[in-house]
Image (cartoon, rainbow, N blue to C red; front, top):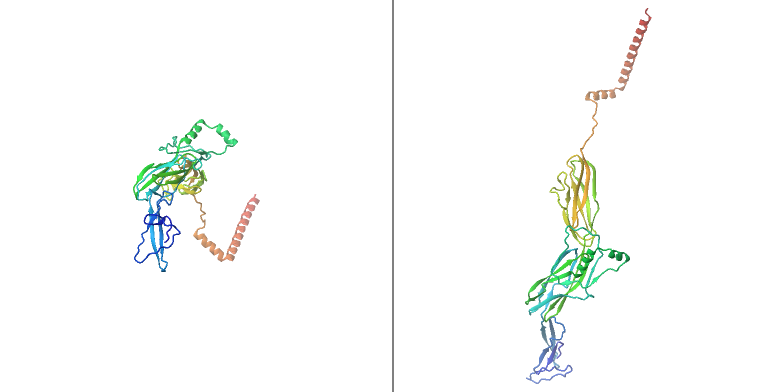
Length: 406
């Protein structure tokens, strides 16, 4: 007989049989009582596990072999976590975001747990990027966050150069105070912090990331189970200010018919590392095909743009009356101040010029006859010339005869 660990073949008094024991002999009608011993401490961790082995019995005088399946189960209070990594990606600075993870009690025992964050500077990485160009916020209030559970323990700062050293010397005291506040502020939060799950029960765990300006964070959250293992979840997140570019700031249509719908395109490009939303405030109620006179129409009026992507905005405008026009519309990205785009041109009255024919129908018939009889036309022209010269000679002779008389 042979059987693998974590099982052992033992005698009736539960003494393990030696591995090199000799074959046993049984007389006719004789019985042998043995027991199988299972070692639940075979594995050193606190995770539930199942062992399944085969007990083989060989009969020396017979080719048949008996096989008996032996199974053992070990249960600890265990949890099944949906994931071992929670990645917030990159969010807009001074905002917060929540992600959810399902946690299930996969053991037949009640599970009592609590969460904590690992405070090992070699494992956690929290640093700040160099500040991008500052944008004026619509609100003067900075982000205020509650529920402080994970604080910054280690901050990696970029190596100082002469330029950065000079900047730090000239830095505003208010900014220095803000940096100190950052070092004391929270970065991540997890809820609920503790609880009890019955066998088969599930619960949603909420991770919150507080996106302080230009922060890059990576920490390890730990879920401790009483009488069971400790589970680790790597939590990462970044925050950055939105950055964008418009390919034009002014659209000049020049001279255009006042009743013609003018069209142009504006490209909005995301040049940053965080996805942002945009909106065209005070958009017109008209449509691109039928805009209201004097009111620009922009399509689409809102949307979101991923990092490195762009959105083409179609601008339609109907002057509606003759004269010079100058209009503006705005594009607002996230919380930044709206950018203005100028539209200008001049609406004119449409005009046409035509060349009207001067020939009447009768003249056309005369010309046609002249083209058909060119010789008769030449003879009539010569006869008219002779008649005109004869009349001129008679006039001259009458003048001379009157002058000869006394």
